[in-house]
Length: 314
Image 1 (cartoon, helix red, strand yellow):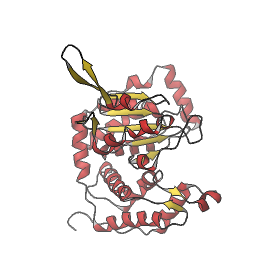
Image 2 (cartoon, rainbow, N blue to C red):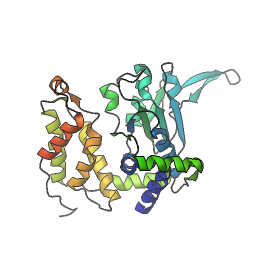
Image 3 (cartoon, rainbow, N blue to C red):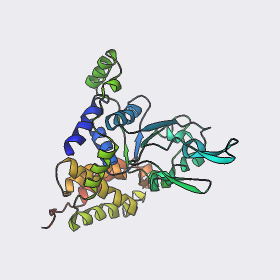
Image 4 (tube, helix red, strand yellow):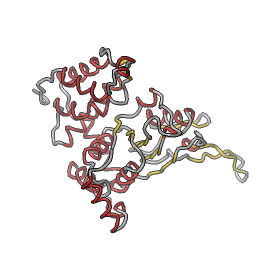
């Protein structure tokens, strides 16, 4: 099963050049049954990444380009009266799929953004008092332009907390950008991606990841990192218990991809930045001092001592 996971990552790399770390962590989030927030400037491959995963895993996918006039019903669906049958029929929204791409999510209204809260948290959608489950596996990949870009607005903390991780792709290196241009001359790289798994296999991988062992020392390490974000004078809002759980889930996925059935401190430190970066809110002191959230998180990682992990049954 792990060989299939590696094959999925290799297929995605055909279309997304030079971003191996981002690809791996995005897939780890899918293995952890979580949702992904990609924050970056337009044109660096965020949408390509989402489509590449859908092709490699044969997941059904839909995309919504969020604009100020996008309505909640575009996402959740709506009921329409059928004159032939005399009853109202439910018309599914774009979110009814395995992989939902919410493009430029911070360009739409808060009301429309909130339409995603239930499905991201509970995997179901309620319309007119009727609740329906979305297909499994289910992942939301949302992209957002950097705050301050034209037409953008801040996502509320409650929405940000629903995303398991936040990633940033950034510009490719000069060598990789040349390779991107070369491959484009030969056609769309997305067309070269072959399916190597399906929804059933991805569900089986998620089940295996759920059962990766975490010893008490690692639980304490994760808690210590979370407490350090809450007690730091440069952070006004630290990690919530949901953030601690997200660290557990991503650490399990990291361990499984490495071929282990137990988590080590390196798994936690590998994903800490991506799990925490969008969940913390800097204090006014930090902002006035020109500090970046990533610098503060790196400092916390250096200050909290890592334990010696134990294998299952030891």
